[in-house]
Structures are given as structure tokens and as C-alpha cells.
Length: 68
Image (cartoon, rainbow, N blue to C red; front, side, top):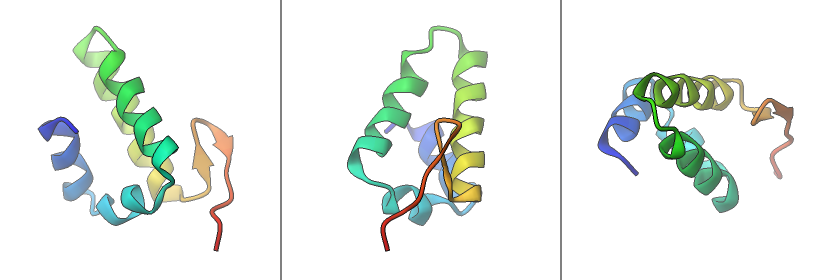
């Protein structure tokens, strides 16, 4: 995980929410963010991930229900 993504997760207190997601989601988010060539696109994607983690029931703009 890039340091700047880790710092963003920690600053918004979302590291636990990130770690609670299934491994495929964590991998998808990171690869999706880091594949972007332009830094502004990376930031936009990271912000989407952070917003979705805050909501808790969204994954890549789709409804998602965590297993309890």
C-alpha cells in the first residue's frame, strides 16, 4: 500500500473499515487507485474509496452487504 493511501486512511480513521473488507476488495481498491497514470485521477479514486468505506455499504459504486 502506498504511504499516501495509508496516511489518508489513517487520517480519516478508516483503516479498520478498510481491513474489515474482504481481501479481493482491498486488492481491487489499491490496484485501481495505483493504475491511474495521472496523480489527480489517483486522488479522485482514493477519495471514492474513502467515501465508500465511510458509508460501509458501497463497493465500487455498487451496493454491498458485509457478511456478519
